[in-house]
Image (cartoon, rainbow, N blue to C red; front, side, top):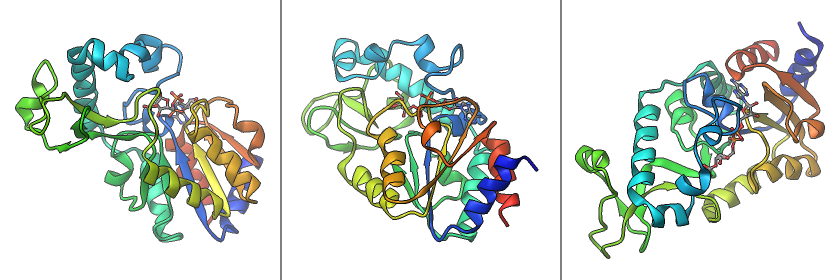
Amino acid sequence: MEPSLRVAADILRAAPSVACLTGAGVSAESGVPTFRDAQTGLWARYDPQRLASPQGFRDDPGLVWRWYMARLTAVEQAQPNKGHLALAHMQERWPGFPVITQNVDDLHERAGSTHVIHLHGNIAQFHCHQCGTAHTLSAEERRAPAPPICKACGGPVRPGVVWFGESLPADALAAALEAVSACGVLLVVGTSGLVYPAAQLPLIAKRAGSRLIEINLEPSPLSSWADVVLRGPSGEVFPALLDASV
Ligand code: OAD
């Protein structure tokens, strides 16, 4: 066994409570692209200001709508991978522990995690950009080239994701802050640690006395705060960590 895996397993075995922060890397092995990986990351190929900002939606609502609906279809076709499943299995030892995710997919839930906090929203939920009214859409509305019109106010309907320049859902942020302030160990998996306030959560956990275990293919700004860093794909590292920590 690699020394770092042994150290991480020892930390996890002794953990009175755990929480996990995930990013796009945890869904990568399900075929959902990350944002910042060179070549394959969405922001390497698309302009976030055009596709993920209120201004971009105002400028070209149809473009933004079609892009999110294509991503939604891809997410619906994706399956949870071994990383999602290992995380869900951890509930056998820490029932209902919080999984704080920046991902807008539902792969943690489909893997069986029961306490998922979505910091950046959910791509399969919809509301009016103008008045906030929630909408349930038909398949036909989703396939349309432009966003549906809100029946309450006539504004454009949008996906329930957080765009650049927007605030995080207050209840999700509050739940995440509470979770990282009270966990003995925080697992930080598949995130570049570049987007705030999510990237602040591991530091808050650390200051509150928690141990940090990072799982990532690459170094991140969070690596230097971690007690242990496990380099590798989460779909392989997570099951190995769980097995080693029994
Ligand atoms: P990023 O794309 O910024 O980072 C993905 C991270 O996952 C990188 O550090 C990779 O090294 C790592 N990674 C890739 N594949 C992996 C694998 N198989 N196993 C483990 N690690 C892997 O994604 P996020 O950090 O999630 O915001 O990005 C944060 C936010 O930026 C996203 O939520 C999104 C984006 O703009 C919104 O949508 C609001």
